[in-house]
Image 1 (cartoon, protein in one colour):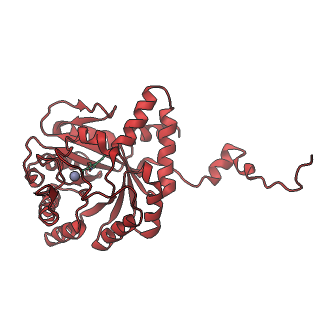
Image 2 (tube, helix red, strand yellow):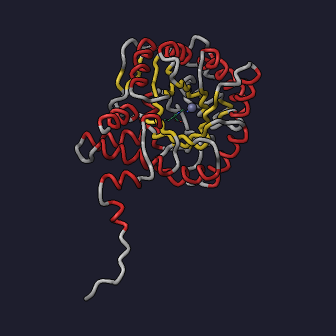
Image 3 (cartoon, protein in one colour):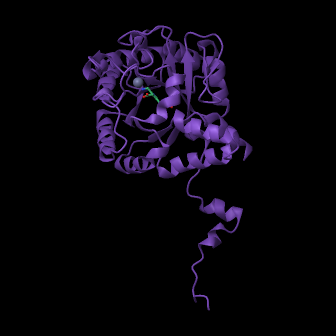
Length: 328
Ligand code: PBG
Ligand code: ZN
């Protein structure tokens, strides 16, 4: 038995930590992250979210302190989800200038003017039926919802928002919001579109956190079918053409192929949403001691970047920033 004359040796490029660092293709930094925050108008003290260990709903009075903590870790952005004290059939709390997200935006910008403040812009937290817009029978009325989205975006803009992030998957939502903002002089407010959002079981824990589970049916007439790939390119292209500044793909982990394909189809920055169910699975397995939480989370985040993500919305963001600091 003899060895081949020539063995090509890729292992040479892995032979020391210094060389591995020199040839590393992908890196993670705190600047890659956006941290989601749940702000509840009806509470005075934080309330832990059961299915998301380490995540709490916070009162408006804790927003400033929390945003300072995020900023101190080097994370450049936060995204607000609001839980209003009152809900109604159309979600009118969403465009109340004194609503919970509007209050949170003012607190955040006053405490940390340099923080990029993003608002999830939808109605499922504000409607008493939990759907993402105005109902027409059992379905969501697209165009009636667009008019309300314009009001909601303008109200957030008046409160000082930096970025509007519409998440309801309504047709024409980017064009509608862009024109409303521009008409009122908010030409510098950005739009981060949830352009590619699947009807996913991975949103389960979030619906507890944000109190927004639909009271009947599901979101399959507006969110995408998980089997569809070409439709993702179509949605991304439409939102880009309508004037979105960033595109979000959501969920992330089960949709890595979509991240790569959308990245290749657009020149806009891509954000991926590492959603509540993805977070809950990692937390549960690490609480049981079955996986190494830090290594699994850092590997997963790196993989989102490798797949094409420029930004990552994640409940792990604070931990990741701490881990990156301690490893320096
Ligand atoms: C609301 C919204 C949802 C999420 C973000 N915005 C829930 C949904 O569509 O049901 C999910 C986030 C997560 O699971 O972490 N439109
Ligand atoms: Zn919604």
